[in-house]
Image (cartoon, rainbow, N blue to C red; front, side, top):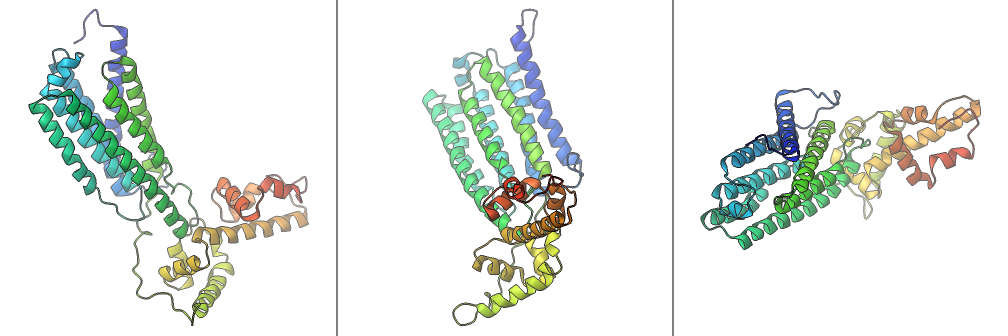
Length: 379
């Protein structure tokens, strides 16, 4: 395959090809064999997500192997006519598409822990690809090949749209159940989905363009890095996400349900506000319900009837605490950093606090502090 007249760009390509084959193999072995988290030791990712990601990385690594074998066994793989006449080429492309689409779909869906989303619809959607692959192996036809490529791109576009709506739904679920959203949000799923879509498009259009080959493999490395980082930084929420069925709706007084709402309001003031339980980092709705002594579903309904999310309720209490501590500090003319007070007020992230503070007060923390902060008080 290599000879004394092999060009530098071909050598460079196979070096890059080898790297993009070795990286996912290492990632797959890491996710399957290493139980602890080497990137974020205090985070335990969902087991299901780790397994799907490992499967995707393994398929990506194997894909490089079977394509390399195809390159070696083909007499002239760089001839487009030979490509379309080759049963091996069609079989390899079909296997690549089915394996990659299924495993990336399973991985992206496993990131959403509000409920277990099935992967079998994706497998059903792969049936036409397998059928088209079989037809092309028996009778190669360029228009039919383009039809298969168009179907694959259309499928993934629709899947990406579904993922976008699912991520929004997941975000609402997070705000209804968690006070701290750091590292729980999955906005990066959009980026992963779009990067993979771009890979699919390049994969279909690549032909014999060496520049597109380079771009394809650089994007692969970017996808591998983003995916591994997201998998290992996403904490397991499954213990908190077990959906509890309502045995009965929130009891209501005639018309408004005032008695029930007042009762839960008193419980929250007694067991959350008075005890300053809201200062606990990563406090979940389930934990608050247990501390208050009420049903998690009743408590969720309470916040819903108030027109707020659980996240908003806890953040408001924390902001009130921050303002109170800030005023005490100003009155005592003590020197302290705002970031320290933010952490003491229950926020794990200064950025999250800043965003919540602006939403609550209508102005930035810096602008609000400039109205009354003494010179010794720093943001």
